[in-house]
Length: 139
Image 1 (cartoon, rainbow, N blue to C red):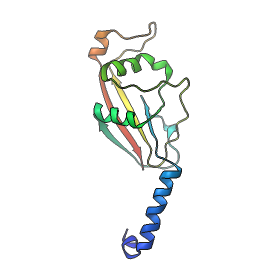
Image 2: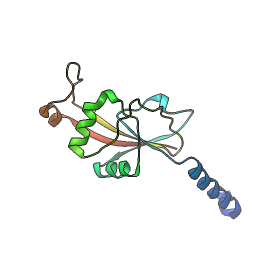
Image 3: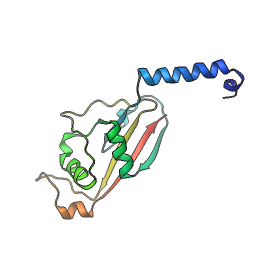
């Protein structure tokens, strides 16, 4: 950092490189229900921040890449009906490659049973479940 203050041209070049990187490789925000080690490559630092429903809605409006599994349609339907958050369900989940500056918004769900012999949850099951939203950002 000290070098940047001593050499304004270096600071300008560094800022210009960051701007170019953002234009060439725009940061992505993914949306899903879980993290997997395969989403990350190499060494990285990941920070986690809890999000409010309004923050999630804002991020979704700005555009997210859905990495939700179509087999979780019942859970996705609960998210839409309970919170008004609508994220498309891809036919097949994309291959997620999270790089520096990218984020994954994860909806954590506790208390919903696995659907083994049916395709939707009861109102009672949904009422007893808890939902949280978090953003995991790579730097």
